[in-house]
Image 1 (cartoon, rainbow, N blue to C red):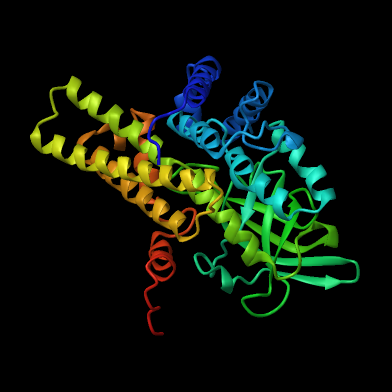
Image 2: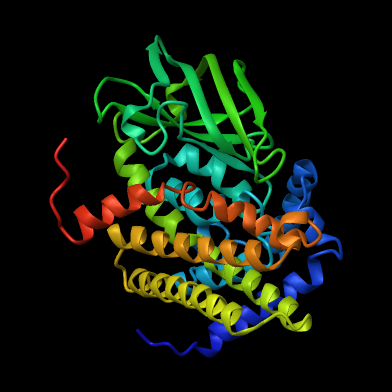
Length: 378
């Protein structure tokens, strides 16, 4: 792997930073890390629309879909800068990273024409209907059903911990079409479809961030199904490998740590013990960054990461947790809310090992798929 950035990559990073500087308002920290979900959502659409006009929303997508066929490094540089800025794209990072590319791989022509162009213009928000009350990390046990009734599927069930569902236009939904592990299918479900109810779940990470979604006799045509019946595992496996590597949360963790260190130094509170703890957190952030870079390097060479993506994901969990522990131990503002970024990172660090696949599940995948160790007997 070549650790030197090309002139094109450096120029692109500079253009993204300049765009962020020009387009984030003075009160952005409040919008990004405060409880005003509707304000966040409205700003994200405005920001993504401006990104699209500047050619910076989906540069790595094919020209046919509004991109310029840039390599995976460009996409990752974009994601890094966005996360360091507090991810002003909101839920649209999912569109850019994995929902759009997944539709390009598995969607019908009609589905692609309907859903991809609005994503490329920054006009639409998606949510993913994966977890259920009794089916979180073990997706094979999900119970939401999609029953064939004549020309339609009738969907009944419940999803939980669904980010952005309160503002989403469309749901990337997993539902059971038959029994067994292979009986799960994917549906592209407009959130205005009759029978869908969304409720906010109060949580440590803020009001309006996560939701539960109920489906009561929701009817969708066969054309809403993505791929074939029972193809969900193949599609989701590809999508999650894109998601786990495409979210450089270590970038925000690293910035949070730097902000905390700067604050402590200004107070004369950065003694040897504190410095040692900060160094450990910084090393973890660098490890997550370098491992993610190695996976992007493989992708740029046409190699799609499998279990390697789980290693990168777990490395990021470790760095987020160490940064969270550091700020809550040494910076009172991380608890009081006087510094919104530090408070937000502490809160999200607590749940870092759950989103995008629980850390324990990632360790199992690393053990069985990467290290080829035997599965634990049951």
